[in-house]
Image (cartoon, helix red, strand yellow):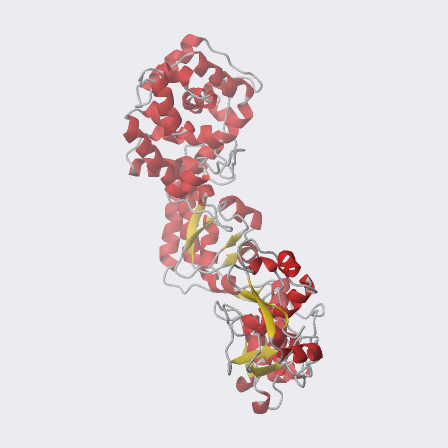
Length: 587
């Protein structure tokens, strides 16, 4: 293998001076779909895919043209012109196509077309050779026949004495700062993994080749025992998408609050607790903090499971003991099995072959995946469409993106994990991925632009200005134009309903019948006008007064009469000291 690799490298070196060939092709099989040589350059509207241009912007900009400055063939509105959106289009085509209405007719749009850029052949060969080098040096051998040094039958389940278990754990204990004690609780978990969960152990042995290199690298960076990698096996069985009924998530099973404390962000799009790298860093920092509290790795593990508060209560109940096994009976039920399970996992992962258990090949080895930085919003389906990496694979490699969407927040960067041999394709076609849109998204974008343009045109046609006159209130002005008070406030950015004489109010009538020729008065205009010039009897409200009490004080006065004279809609707003009309003074 090394000789073949050397020969390949020599061949590469010989051809390194040749120019890399980038072959352009269309996803839709039309090699000429981007050619516009036959079009006049001054008539081309370019709405090809870039991160800064969208169909919505193009349509909206077209629809908002000033009709007085319209040039022949330009689109000015949707009522009498046509709109067509494609990769490239001329103004004449836009004007002559059939009218585009809502809903948009089928086959008007298609998925974005693009020119695929092939990877550099020399660089692709180097990537392949590096992958082969990692594969040669991987320690995983999934062939049971080759690993079965004990010549076990395929269906044999070996059994060992307690003495053998104790001897093996004692050997492992000498290589770690953890206390790998052998006792009854530990024995039960060893039997659980070695006898009843053999299939799960086989899968975890394979997944170890995916995640353990990452764990060991970060543990080494924090100068922590490498055996802590087995804690993720206890927590999640190396499933990055694992979740518990209590709400813990990811490889290291972080609860929401603890995760936030250690920088694991959770939003509608992202949950960093599912991110293998970020969650491992957070786990190292949290375990380092717990070890600093107790100066004992067994207690640090117990606190990781039940929390420092519960562990401290167990220490108090035990009379201040600091040994895990002396605290065992005072710990919560789950925590009593936590450290024994950790010890058993140490054992079974190291002695799986002795139990006739062999790794199941993982979906990806560690060296078969790599990461790229993403700075724009992108959906997994865009990546699948452009570089042909299945969406299911992207979801498996990137469980932190809950909806299959990487958000494009300005100033933020995100990492995307890809199959290692697809990284070159992503980098070469990055802008095409950012600008890609599905047929439905292009339809939605166009419909939104059309609706916004129509709304803007409609609002302009129905806009008028009302000047506030003496005696007018906002409610009566809204009534005059058949609109709501809240609408008038929104149109004029008003925080309250207070207005002043001479104030200019923008009103959108919406083609509703206007009452502009009528005076702004209440419904019972004649009656109110007659009462306006009269003098009234008044009542000053005292504490405890109700409209019913007040009406009883004055002969011939009713509650409805008081409400009508004072325009009272809610009697609860009446306060002591307020002066209200009772009846005309002549009555």
